[in-house]
Image 1 (cartoon, rainbow, N blue to C red):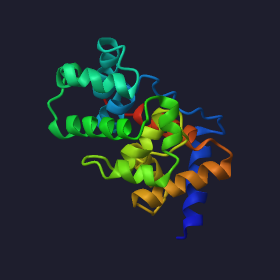
Image 2 (cartoon, helix red, strand yellow; image 1 turned 30 degrees about the vertical axis):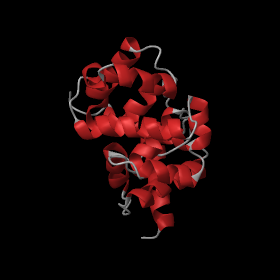
Image 3 (tube, rainbow, N blue to C red; image 1 turned 120 degrees about the vertical axis):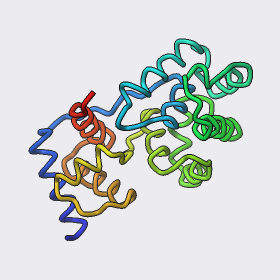
Length: 204
């Protein structure tokens, strides 16, 4: 099977299961503390039950941590572990490291982060943070309004049912991007439509 075959199969499956759209991207967050924490602690299988409540609690507890600068100040004086209700050291350390990286690069707001992430060098800098992989970087971009495809277990399962054979992260992301382009959908919108469909079928 060629890459073109994979795109054709995924496109056919999208039309059969999801219809013709339109598919709107997820709104993301405007609170930068929420953006960073959601991107780092996200878990595809338990997002609605485990991740989202913690991110919402963060915004409720630290409403003023809406920029990178203010979120960083809050972490310095408060208990992020307690607010997020997690003791996962690697994820907590990654949140701090990503925040420090953005601050060092003068990125303070949602709009600034969306523009900053358009540069490959900046994406590479994020990937250099321990605990941050390609999915986290793509998802981070989506959370600030970018049109990205973050390949998770839901997108993988959808593609597998469609008969897509490529399995690498970058390869599968490209198949989704090309499928969205072929069907005339926003890339992030197609990703969110697939994610919403697959996550709705999860057992509670």
